[in-house]
Image 1: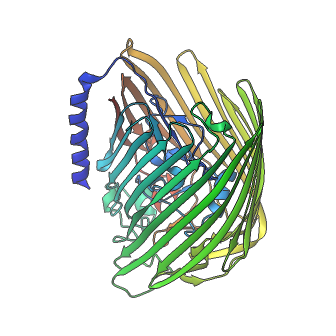
Image 2: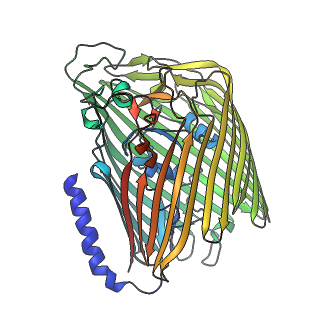
Length: 610
């Protein structure tokens, strides 16, 4: 991996030196991307690829998915989302094979792959270096091959040894995409191949909090004893995604969102292997006390999803209907299990001027275990010039995942039957360029959680989750003040452990250090979580389990940063967790894993055209 990083950096320097003289005066780019929709239709609103300075210093991959996480000190390790919306609850309940995905920001999946379209060749080279030899490299290249074909590749490499012993993160993940749109606008297709490789040496936390909090003998963090000095998780695999859509009544002048009829096919294949190894549980970290010198557990999962659908438009009404077949298979300890699921669905959208109503429902039939599951959702939207309002509600009745019911490894083994989990939610949202807000209420029944023994259990009672979110932005001359304020309260049994209050505040000043040449932002960011019990992470199963031994949060994290922009190059310098210098050692967001001390990061992004 070090060789790959060095080769990548050499490539950056050579490419930069050759291209610096070829940059034209146009500091803009027509680069757009879209995601695969939930209903498997790729024809979707495009998003412009950002070159802005705002938030450029926020380089951690998980920040694409939220602002607050339970996480470890080192980048590239397991994490758990804390700002849980009803969409995340739906996704969490709708897991098919695995019961958790704590490395999701570092793994390509259909839902997070970007499908790029560019009008000319564009390359973005991105590199970050930080404390303890942390290095993160990312390259994106997109270009049209012909007026009908578009190609893109995105490649990420992360290598970070970590502050504490045995905490290396070494990840590598390329994705290749080819898109086609016919001249007649009748046929659209996309083919994608992606590969994932995640290596995480997870020490299981420090052996005693006193080593970190009270002792001056362990200011060198590498000396602190850890629970699992030999544990490693290796995730390897990848997959394919193919999507095609045919509009028989389209012509080259038709708008993509006003086609009268369309038929589509979506094929998604994924195969991943999770291999956990350690040198035996020498510190009694796991509940099963086994006299084993070496542990090697492997879990292989396979997913094949085939979808056929049709889309009809009539005046202001769009209909989407589909039938999906899902095949899931899992192997563990020379045992395997599989399941077939049939999943018909229908969606209806009414759109008239500034008003939009979207209704969606599906049913899934399983050949084993639970017989069926349901999802019903409704979204109502209204636009008022710069203001938009949304009302959302739904009911989800979801199967347990395959590995919730069936799991076999060295330290943990179970065969269990669980009922479907029910979720009923109602949410109201409002959007304005200077403020966003939402309130939501969810009722969850038969929730599946992991007990402190490390195994899944089901709560047959209901509990409720109330959430408020407010994101005001204040701009005054060249000063910008952005805020995220979240309040969430669980009523009933606390199997879902979340902080009640979280906030993030960003204050920065923008100016031209050199007129029309060097644009600059200097500022500070403050992040806070109220006290909460949180969940404990188990490396052998990648599960977050209940614990009552350690309170987390109730501590601010203060960062200072500067962003710079010189033509097509963006640069940031950042000093993270500045207040760690005060010596108040209460910074934990995951039990037994202290957060990183104060640290410095530097990053650069350089875009090249043609």
